[in-house]
Length: 149
Image (cartoon, rainbow, N blue to C red; front, top):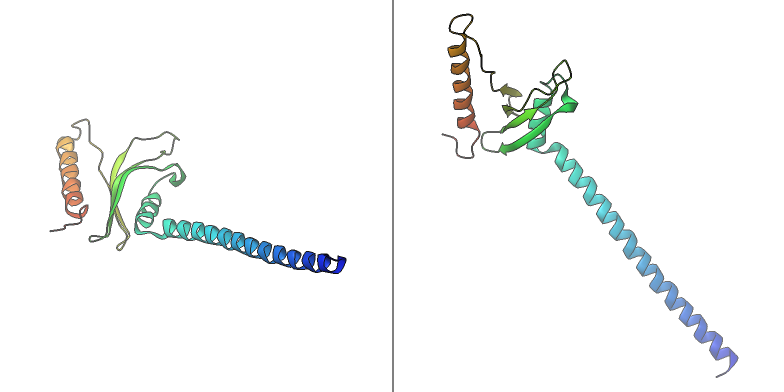
């Protein structure tokens, strides 16, 4: 092998290495772009989903929306209602305990489970609070389902 042949071989080898390196870098760049794009898409979907819209609607009705903690939230596409429980801070900064809610994203409607009256003053207040809670539960049973009647 002559010096000219060795240099020609070296040139061809370097060209192949550069071409392969370019393909590898292109593959890495496309993979990173795909992962980043999917992550952005997933975040967008999470923020704009019907369930997310229902949670945002509930937050708008709280004293401290940033403190909201949700449990058991489900969205029912046929009725357009999000249903679940929320715990948030009151005006004094303390958490009040989980309260059931129903939220309709089409009508921008939110309803919370009424508090139970613990005394009977004024007369009949306890019975009235129980009636309000029963009405809420009937409403929730009718809309928190994928098989509305």
